[in-house]
Length: 346
Ligand code: FA5
Image (cartoon, rainbow, N blue to C red):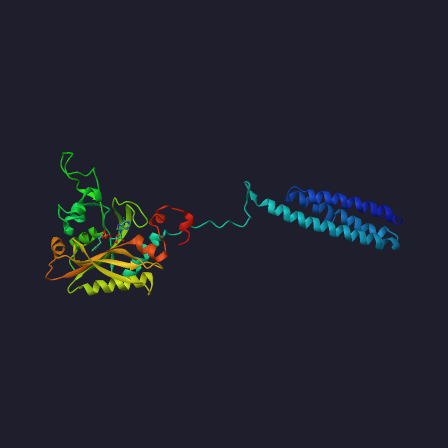
């Protein structure tokens, strides 16, 4: 060691060490190169800074303070550079095949159930509480279940092809003019028949599903829509039971303040029959939600039940209209346009 080392040359060497250190530490392209630069400049045993520190001893005591201060500055700067480069390269190391695996994830946009599905589930839950089990039936139905068994005779206008989707591929016999025997069901009342045919009373079911009618589409009509059918048959069922169940249901689904009214009406499969109306939100307007009544003795007989033994009520409500009333939707078409902006609200 040279005891007469000059401060000027020691400081000049320290400066060029600092420049070389900056270049190596800042310019390291990966963690391995950075580690090599660290050992070269900041290594505890043979690092260049260590040697530069040793040089202190060779300086005149009066020069040591100035050198020591500059040394500390350079050391601090190179250590900070090492840390910064380490962080930069560590982040870069997490890019795999062009994908930064360390980036926080993007939460996927989750879909949710369509308002009609939500309505269906809620109605099932409410009627479940009232003791109604769920029954199902086919959407492609034969004429017996859609009409005959429901006391709708051959000559009835409800069977008019203009009001029904008959399946032209399902014709009886060989002739082209044979009557079709299958159709897209026009009401869920078909399920009443299927259930009663398959089990003895007592019966307490609901059936929810799609029905089809060639109706002109407008704000409250669609050619495909959903109905909920209810049927309760056992000893001693009366019209009072029907009104209680429907009133309780309306309150459970639409709220305590719902207004419901029963208007005398006619359906071939119920006697007496009523239309069930509910008051639309805000507007003083009654909207028809469905039909109901006491199961006609002819229907009970058609499925082999004895009308002297049991009686029953049935109802069929439009699911879309219930859903619209609940959510203040004023056009049924909104439910079928798949506009995500609209659907996201529910
Ligand atoms: C019937 O379908 C009967 N089966 C209801 C019934 C069941 C009566 C059991 C008695 C006993 P209606 O055709 O009125 O009835 O239809 C019932 C409800 O379905 C209507 O009140 C309405 O809410 C809904 N609805 C009818 N047609 C359409 C349509 N084109 N678009 C949307 N909803 C409709």
